[in-house]
Length: 74
Image 1: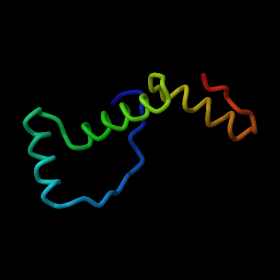
Image 2: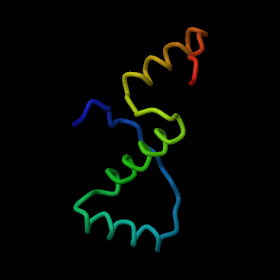
Image 3: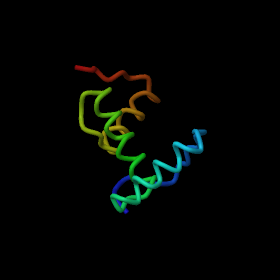
């Protein structure tokens, strides 16, 4: 397991036909659907924030938000 904790669950509703195709494509690349979704989420987060995903940096940001501090986005 990587540094990232894998304890949260995300439940989504999708078209059953799309699910079948997705699972087949994942299997073809020897990946699980969860692995592929995690990669997609990481890419989305990085594209939206403009910086590489790091669980440690997100924990620091969350800590600043709780204490009322705001990080400066550049």
